[in-house]
Length: 410
Image (tube, rainbow, N blue to C red; front, side, top):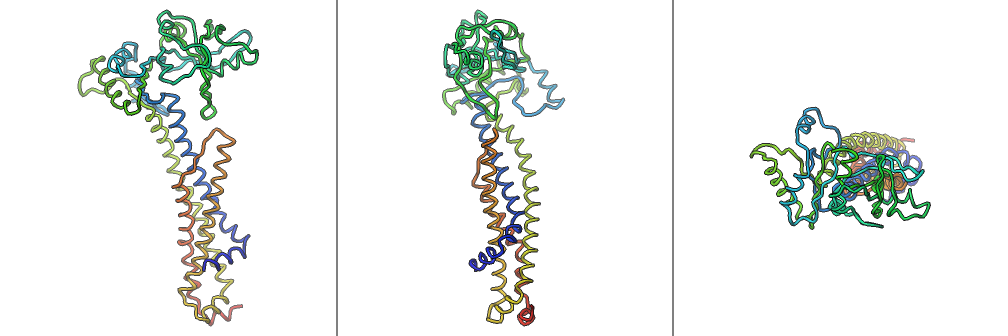
């Protein structure tokens, strides 16, 4: 039965291909889009979230991490919150003596500045103000020089640590060591004391194009930001949740918040950023089924029409087979098998096409792609399901043909 179905399909290659085109396109779209979304989810979790907050770490912020804008009511509540200060950082530090590091860094909005050395200018570098512990939280490794020290912060020293990209662009071409060179940041001179090892790019955005200043010197240049951020790194991932609870309790006591009153700060982990991203991808996942369903239905209708045409063309064959003893059930199964094989083949070709498209997207763009087993399984199930759903009517029509009438058909 399957052999006969394959022979019929291979005997009409062009017709079979155009019959399958709708299913191939729909399944390929499903596999490729799901692969890109899943790849983005994994990429955000493994790279962006860790780069923003750090591994085994959490942050205390004035406002929560949110992708998108606050509405007016939310923004008004956030605006009434007090700023996160060095005193808050001290309270968290006292509550977490077992932490690997508790850091204070300049918060939102992060200023950007030209970095100038002689006649060379690098534009729009992010400028952070940090305490020494921040470099531990973010797992910075140093290619040359040293990190910002506690003495730098205490004495408001005009020193800085630059990312690998900044050092490479300013000094790589001339072969100079960046350590000890003076650059202008926000119009003021600072001496480079360290260069971080490269962290690479995330979605085309470099994580090596920054300047770090002692947080006190940063305030001298830019004033106090709307808020600061407290970053806490624990030794193990299992220690993060209990540490967050202790930090929350310590800050509530420090800020004299009464029981039952909401927090005037947010405690965030990298999971919060991942969750916000996943909320965005839910919108795409709600649209994809509708688009795929349209293509699948169109493909199914095409299969049904082609099968009906096949029944008309093979009427004499059906009559002869019935005359030789084939039952109506046998004829029905034969045509149904052809429809299922045809649609399943479309599903397989669609999966392969989707995989190739996702691979090309990941190769030529910064968008990652990750093929998942469930998307492949769903695509193949859709393909064969279409064959069953839209192949039943042509198969039954073929099975109900009267053998004598069918044999007279030219």
